[in-house]
Amino acid sequence: MRNGEELRADLIALVERFTDANIWVAGDVMLDEYIVGDVARISPEAPVQVVHVSESFARLGGAANVARSISALGARVRLHGIVGTDRAGDEVIRRCGENGIDAAAIGRVDEHQTIRKTRVLGLRQQLLRLDWERNAPCPESLSKSLITKLEEGPAPTAVILSDYGKGIMTQTAIRALIDAAAKAKVPILVDPQGGDFSRYRGATILKPNLAELEEATGRGLRGSTEDELIEVVRDLLEAAGVESLVLTLSERGMMVITRGEKAEIIPARPREVYDVTGAGDTVIAVLALALSVGAGLDDAARLANAAAGIVIREVGAASVERDELIAEVRGRATSKALTRLALGEQVAAWKRKGQRVVFTNGCFDLLHSGHLSLLRQAAEQGDVLVVGINSDASVARLKGPERPLVPERERVAMLAALESVDAVTVFDEDTPLELIQQVEPDVLVKGEDYKLDEVVGREEVESQGGRVTLVPLLPEYSTSSLIDRLRKR
Image (cartoon, rainbow, N blue to C red; front, side):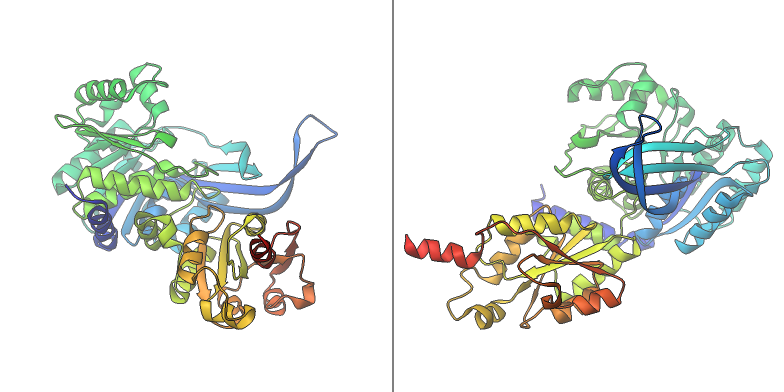
């Protein structure tokens, strides 16, 4: 039996070997578009919310998002599917190239409309989704030719069928891909669609969510106990002729059931959920990668569960990078305490994903409610919050030889434990200017006890197109006043 440290070490070693994997992904290719803004009023024209648009962006969706997740984790991936000869199809092919996805097995079809989903978000929640699609079975001749192109590449270490029921995964295509995986002696994983899971007979693993399991069994399963779900899944595995099933249960985590073996329950870690879009794609991508490099199914599911916990904290169909997944496995409080070098790498990863970086700094000696208020307000200014804290030597130079009262290691640990904080690092200089120049934040936050022209780093941030925000402070809350009150008592 492994202890917690041994388990984490084993999981991290698996992630570090992801670069050895070569995955085939076949399924319904989509383009996901996002319109993001603020909601402050109801339209005078109709009883609908008005979204004041602040940004819009697009990402690969469906099977293409699975492929993007695999590539982001360092593995090779070849994608099989179809798109139209329209603007959205051009965008899919371009983004595949940008994300390191081999698109040689994607067909361009004049009569096909590229599947496009546009989501409108306000206050980090979906308000509306618009779909452009015309579902029709992929012609058998085209399907066979695209599978042939798939097979022209290097042999896979695992195969994924990402079936959204839009037409590419015909019965002929499913059987051809399952046979190809069997011939290569590699696992084939299926994100299933529809009520008949027996169409995937011979697959290694099915990965439904609870709603898909309900459709496949014709039973209402919400509120079922773990034992009841396990019994239902075992019956389904026998009937479908599939070896294993990984059931995703949202905030309840995952359930791993293999025929003839004891079921494994993997609980989710409590966290704030912003958007579950694409979480299932991340799960099946990580499952396939982990199995490709020698993981058992239980460890593969643990890694997939950790990866899903990362993407649900972000808006839209997000992907996970290796460093993020390793940090999540190590534990968020520990992983958020970063050296200056590690911080630079983390900030670069956030920016590549289009996330808005916020920075604030301070001594944070004797953490109190005023600090918590400042950090909460700072976090609301963007997507990730980086906090710089003065080293013990820096605090002593600024505040006197009796300070700090709390050593920097403990101050870092307390800040890292806060949900609002995404990274903490220590600077030894008297001011955070060098650190601000390294991070190049989109938003620099200080309290309203400063004037704008007093904020260190203001010119540097604004010259890069960022902004400085002064947030309200709680009255009479400061470390100095707290120390004075303690002395008087």
